[in-house]
Length: 203
Image (cartoon, rainbow, N blue to C red; front, side, top):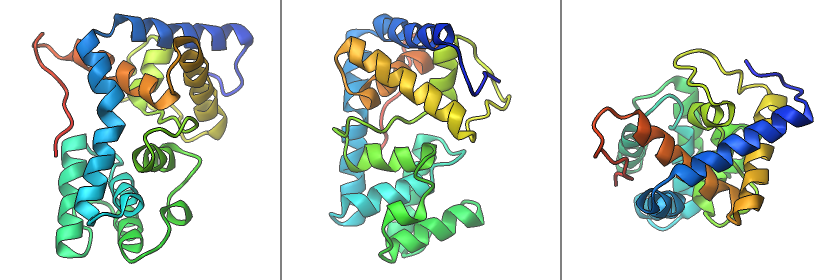
């Protein structure tokens, strides 16, 4: 794991790695990455009957350890049936509370990935939240950790990487969530064995 308390040199290295990943993205990857949270927002509105916060909250609650395709399927199913299913009990309870009217910010862990995922989907132009998942981590440290624990449950480590994405975004001239999404797309699609494979938002 990377240290919770980093040196200035380490933070500079992480920020540089993020910026360089951005620079490797193709124009098409940048377009799709920039649109990622906006399209997720549209999906949240659609599945919830017009309540973006509720839709985003349920998507976030059901996101842990699920592919985006499966995440979307479970959220659609939850709103269609009136209750969440297909996930661990904690995630289902959170999703059900949000569908029942609870404010997602009072249900989700707002200082970690799930909470930030909710904020990015609820408001794609929000310039503060950054989703640090395993891929965002690996981009910053220039190493694919595979199934190894990255320690992102530690607030210090999470916030360190989020701040590096914010610093990279400032250099690039974009909001952090779009930098995270573009670099995520570029990173994922360079891991895919078929060169013409594309990661798309599934609705």
